[in-house]
Image (cartoon, rainbow, N blue to C red; front, side):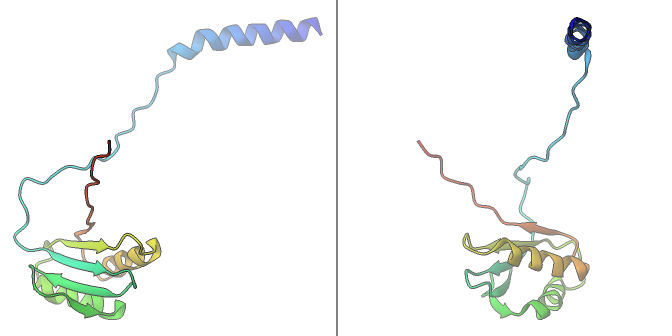
Length: 125
């Protein structure tokens, strides 16, 4: 039993000496920032609480579409300019699956700039 304790004490001392020498890895996490200026044209996809989709471009009246029609409608609104951003706005009660399905449909159709709309929470206190 005594040799086992001696081995454990030696290992403990080795770990105590080497632990401060180990460098920690740095992880660069993305940050949320505000853009310098708002794009001239934005296409907004609204996912309602009933998971129905509506497309609105440049503050026009939203038009109801199905998931099968979504990619074609967005590409029509982009008018050949793939750099026009697409923003998905979803109701708080919508299932995450519906938003991911919408994003997946757009990405499979080749829509490059797809983002999520977020609302800043009011400070509490």
